[in-house]
Length: 154
Image (cartoon, rainbow, N blue to C red):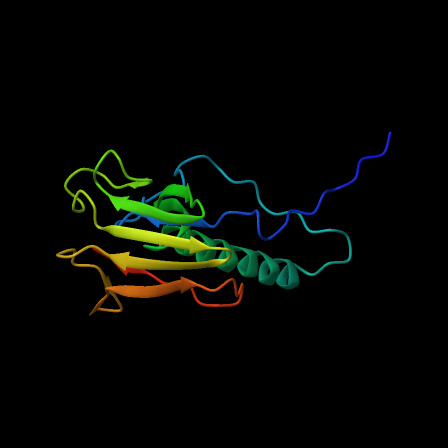
């Protein structure tokens, strides 16, 4: 039996909103236990093996640091699919995107999705900012996958 992969129409694929916590979850590797000494294959110098191990250890440290960043995957607290049209956000129970109580006004604004473009409209009195500047209306994405992600703060 043959299976075919169906292409998802970009018109039908709803936008995804990722919400990150303001503080990252800190994870540290377990301590203790004994590590066995590295074994080198026949004909490989110990210096080359040591260099390779150092390179892997440096990559691991950088990867863990990236995961722990404020916008890293370990601080992700929610993923929300946006419907076509208006999607209200805030701490109120009737919103499409619901923030924790006390972290935002009941209705902080709306995300408006039309195809691949998503705009944010701040509600009157909501202290929504981007790069430290107040926001009332802003395009978040135009469907360009290489565009830098927009970070908003309340």
